[in-house]
Image 1 (spheres, helix red, strand yellow):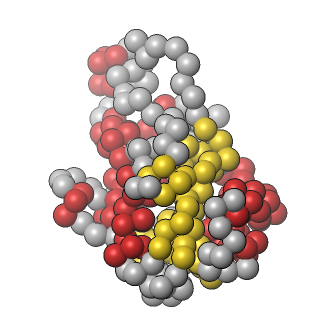
Image 2 (tube, helix red, strand yellow):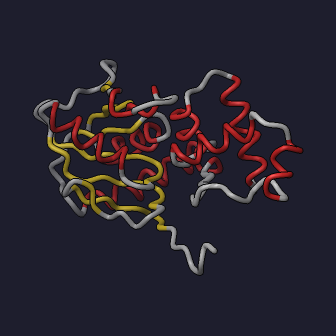
Amino acid sequence: MKNVDDLIESAGDLAARGLSRGEIADELNVSRETASWLVERAGRSASAVESESGDGSAGGPQDVHVDWSAIGEAGARLASIGDALADLLREHSHDVDLVVGVEKAGVPLATAVSRELGVDLGTYTPRKHQWEEGDIEDLGGSFSRNFAQVEGRDCFIVDDTITSGTTISEAVEAIEESGGNAIAAAVLVDKQGVGDVNGVPVDALMQVIRVGNDD
């Protein structure tokens, strides 16, 4: 199991490889704020970090790291999870003809879902992948031309995790602006119990519930 020090090291390695803060957040399944905190800690010496808080973990943002690599590294497991997500989505509609996977981690899940449902596959790259510093609202996401387009299509959205709902909200807006109709979304893990984004229901195979005080 990864601890915070492992995540700091991973964030530093990813930053050194040229990934943006938003891409690092996606890779580590944490919020953008948490990704920034991890990268900043990685850029300082271990002694400086420890002198501030006594260890490498205190003082960070409140977040939950989700490591689902045991699923992602095995095609059979991924297909089984895709079947489960598809089963969740069928409760909303049997007439949807397109599944949109949110880049990057949502795409293999969406591929498994689209295969189970027998529908087309689209992909959406959110603006957070371009985000490094400054106002993310000035950036834009995009649909890949190499996959099915959303215009005139009823769509399901698939991602791996949801924290605040910002990325799913962005995907819903992008689908509607492109002439599509977002019916429902499904994720592996809901960190906050979001349940609904812009009027679009969000189903999760697992929900994280915090118990106790953060003090």
